Amino acid sequence: MPRGNIAHGLTVLAGPTAVGKGTVSTYIRDHYPHVWLSVSATTRPPRPGEKEGVHYYFVSPERFDELVAAGEMLEWAVVHGRNRYGTLRSTVEQAVAEGRSVLLEIDLQGARQVREKMPEANFVFLSPPSWDEMVRRLVGRGTETALEQQRRLETAKLELAAESEFDHTVVNDDVQRAAAELVSLMGLAPSERT
Ligand code: 5GP
Image (cartoon, rainbow, N blue to C red):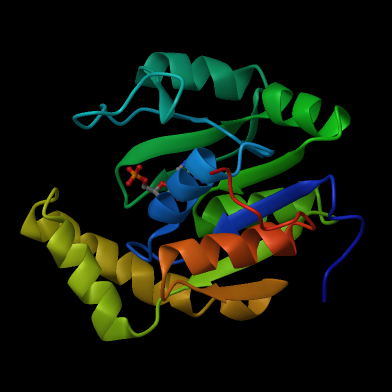
């Protein structure tokens, strides 16, 4: 069941590896300017085309340690057993205080931490149309090694089992449709920028 006032609050989008969370959130960034998409900090190096402050804040492990020690992370996690990713607390809190509709696209561990701290937030699980389709997407991405793909599939199996912890499920059968459903679950009109 939805909890609290979700219209101008915080929505957390999580789901298994390679389900297309990044694609859906990129679509939302490009087509729904009234959604405030949180930019995470990460210790992972940028991929080709990724921009500082747009896709992530790319930070050193030392800087990440400092942010954690300073209490600047609303949540953070080691994802796929490798790099650290975290949500910058002050920017999100400020956006929520300003009445913006905030979207966090994070992993399941992070979603659980946000639930502890902000149980009134709206939790949306993005699910794949099928397991086979998810494997196809993961392998098709082609940016990770075979070992990395295997690691991500193991994570995905565990993450699929978490669907019942969420308020809503959106099936990512089509990016445009899934984005519109997510935006309407945020209590916003699902009209795109043209
Ligand atoms: P990628 O390296 O492909 O950009 O992202 C890998 C994973 O990190 C994705 O599942 C994404 O949801 C997750 N992620 C991105 N930002 C954050 C964050 O701030 N916190 C957490 N916990 N996970 C994140």
